[in-house]
Length: 140
Image (cartoon, rainbow, N blue to C red; front, side, top):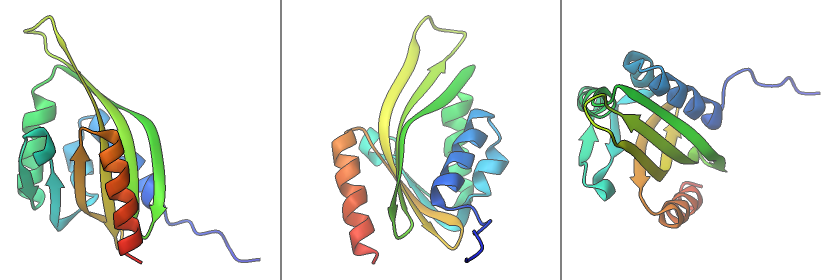
């Protein structure tokens, strides 16, 4: 009987990254990214961020803009070939306003050699799901 791998797979790594974001531990979040990784938030009008330094700056601005912040995972799927689909809700609140931010999205994570090479965030869950499925098939 073959030994079970102790190396975490893409879903486990993605969950660890989300947990780090919930702790606001940006150094831990960055440890999951490669030097040339891309964080695509353009579908939300928040730009494309390339490389650890720019992605770190984006997260500082995004997460740092809230006094309270958390991500709740609704669904996480390993679609194979290093592609993970995460459907999440982000919640944020600042002490300066009475309102709360609630943002539901589909994020497509592409993993290679233990690091995220690209994340694309979609406001339309079905669009994100279709893109993730297509990408997993293309990466065969």
